Image 1 (cartoon, rainbow, N blue to C red):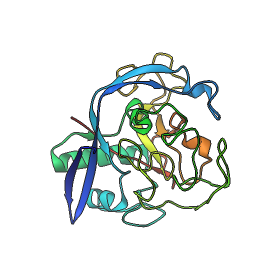
Image 2 (tube, one colour):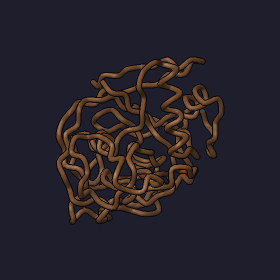
Image 3 (tube, one colour):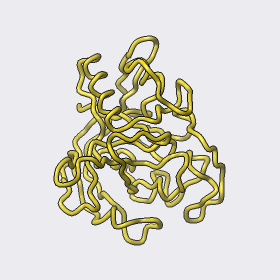
Image 4 (cartoon, helix red, strand yellow):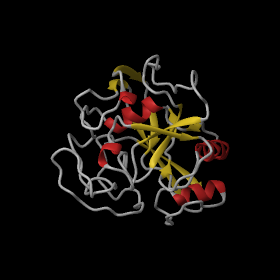
Length: 245
């Protein structure tokens, strides 16, 4: 059973953080993984220290109690907040840290992939393939041997689909998740200690992980990565929090 820390944010709204054990993993994708790109290379070993990460992506109820408004396109208190920029996510981290006297932040890209994989090495934390019964993505498209499924055309409430082995929900699909790092085209020179890679490139571009409701299944792989400008907001972008032990 995963160790969970619960933060009371007020107005009956709680935040659940799951303790992730430290370890070493192989980050990135192999050349034979369907949908892989040079962005995910070279595979490299990264050592991660224990940390807490959100059991769910930040919900609209959580965002509103901290920020005082709800920018989401797809409304619902228990849906992930969407239409938030990287700047918005960082401001949320600052405000929740002030409110709780704890140091909340966005995950590093390495922490995110380690948490997503949950000691697995396949394309998805669920195995070699994925179905729309396991995650929210465009089910008109398939990956590997999986059948076609449902295309919901919107976000779904957090916790609707099965968790991974660490007890985390929606690591594949629903909304893309902002990470702390700036974008690099590959992993040459990437940190191997789990910290965010915040130098050596254009600071305007920030990392996103996990895929979303509008994406193909290959975009939701554990190793898949993309970017956006730090101030842009899209109705398929959200985030989850990290708290150091």
